[in-house]
Amino acid sequence: MANKKTIITIGRQFGSGGHEIGATIAQDLGINLYDKEMLKRAAKESGFCEEMMESHDERPTNSFLYNLVMDTYSANGYSTASFLDMPLNHKVFLAQFDAIKKIADEGPCVMVGRCADYALEDRKNVINVFIYADMDQRIRRIAQKYDLTDAKAKD
Image 1 (cartoon, rainbow, N blue to C red):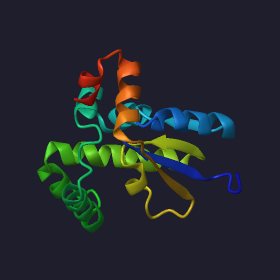
Image 2: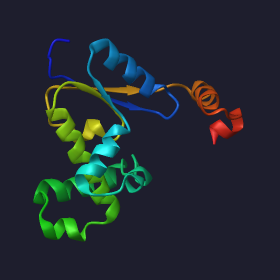
Image 3: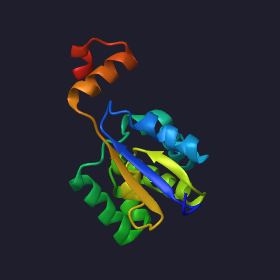
């Protein structure tokens, strides 16, 4: 690895194998892998329970919500008034966002999902990757992984 502080973020379609690819990269490079661990860390540091973090996991990724939260975040930082008035899902998103930044400050790693590419978009030491697969491959992977019929996996 050219830069010992490089962070790799992996966005992925559900069922595309993004987690497995991230795990392989992290193992080959001898660096930490963060996936759901980012939720646990955000819950611990923010005071939100893990169940709440999981219920909002990776949901606020549409551009309107992201822009709304980021405008509030970048314009005001964490001013008490704006944060207290913010809807819960925005607070959860910001807690995840802050946990991602703190993890990235600790050293090289692979981060899977959780909008890590957005959280770290202003950093120069980040490589962003997106993993995708065609629908048939994703259905087969999901069906096999969760022991489902193809029809259930497609749903």
